[in-house]
Image (cartoon, rainbow, N blue to C red; front, side):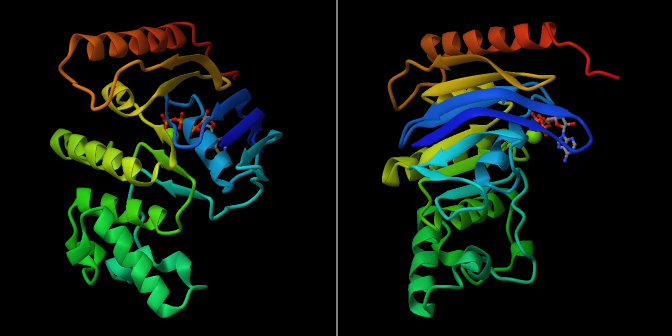
Length: 250
Ligand SMILES: Nc1ncnc2c1ncn2[C@@H]1O[C@H](COP(=O)(O)OP(=O)(O)OP(=O)(O)O)[C@@H](O)[C@H]1O
Ligand SMILES: [Mg+2]
């Protein structure tokens, strides 16, 4: 369980990125976060990951206060951020130096198998497609067996076909071990396809404008009318936040 309490974040330059964010995400839940550019989505994920600190408020994962990067929380960024001088295997196992070699190999191969890249362990990052690289980044997040995985627009750099393929793949991985997922996306269809709840943020400063349940059974049919209805509801909430957006203070 991820518990976010009254989070505020003001950057040292005075930018108020987030104000009074409170959100509980249940164990095994998938929550999507959408919102206009600058509404604080990436900031929120960085705070949950422990890579940055809130100015006020608290974040707990399974009762543990997050004050620094923690093995219970994994993160996948928009770009795969693979280390070019390490093989796929080396990249995925990078954070497991504390484990014995056989245990590390076992974990790495398990994670690569789960993302469908069992045969790619010895490849170099430059030999991978964009979609494959992002799968490696997901394997790297999975390998530490986190209870929460944060994804910041993980598929936005991919073509539409690969994107849908990886979304479905992410759902399979999720169904396997049921980690909690927090997915930042600007793709409303992605949010409705994956999430059980969609959080709409409003910018300047980033606040929660709306939280809506996606009341669709799984597997979800992207072509159904009810899918369209859910998309439209989120789009209209998003429209409201953008129309009412106040310009940032000069
Ligand atoms: N390191 C930083 N220092 C100062 N201000 C920052 C920093 N990072 C982000 N900001 C500001 O904080 C606000 C929120 O930024 P953030 O990157 O979280 O938005 P976002 O919702 O992820 O936007 P996008 O959709 O464009 O990725 C913006 O106004 C941004 O300019
Ligand atoms: Mg961002």
